[in-house]
Structure formats: C-alpha cells, structure tokens
Image 1 (tube, one colour):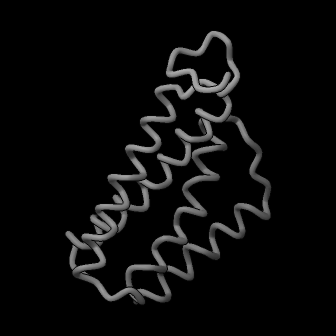
Image 2 (cartoon, rainbow, N blue to C red; image 1 turned 60 degrees about the horizontal axis):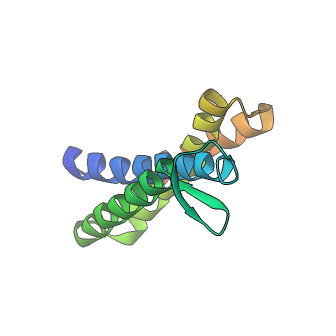
Length: 118
C-alpha cells in the first residue's frame, strides 16, 4: 500500500474515532440546562452533536473513496484501530479508565493490523 492510500485509511479511521468522541460529549450534554444548541423534546443537540455527525459523515465519504482503490481485505482491518483510538481518547480527554486488559487488547489489535498488512 502506498503512503497516500495509507494516509487516507488512517484519516478515515481517525475521523470516525474523533467523531465518536464528539458524540460522547453530546450525550453528556443532552440534558444540561446551560447547554447552547438546538433544543428538541427537552434535549439539547449541541455543537458537539453536529460536529460529531459532520466528522462521521466526512470520514464515511473518505472511507468510500478508499474502498474504490483498495481491496476490502486490505482496508477493513484498519477499522479495528478505532477500538484502540477511541479508548485512548476517552482516557486522555474524558478521564475514563483504561486498565491493563484494555492496553493489552489494544496492543493485540495493533499487532493484528500490522500482521494482516505485511
């Protein structure tokens, strides 16, 4: 896989992961009476919601572009990296816990992606 295709795959996975973080922030803000956003049925659809949906949409379009140029059996294993990126982001940005099992599992996922693509 050339560097441009690898960059496109990784950007797509990163965008999906960051989009999930924004949706988590939106979920935490749903019933915050001080939240600024669009109120629907007593719930606030904040800027986090719209940024998250936007990132997921753009990342999906990039993913479709990737699938035009790479076989699915090469590209798809990279999606597993979202299971590494999201918990790391949650740990560093939201203060969520990540024990040794989570770290070990993440290392196994990374090893699997490397093994499949070498």
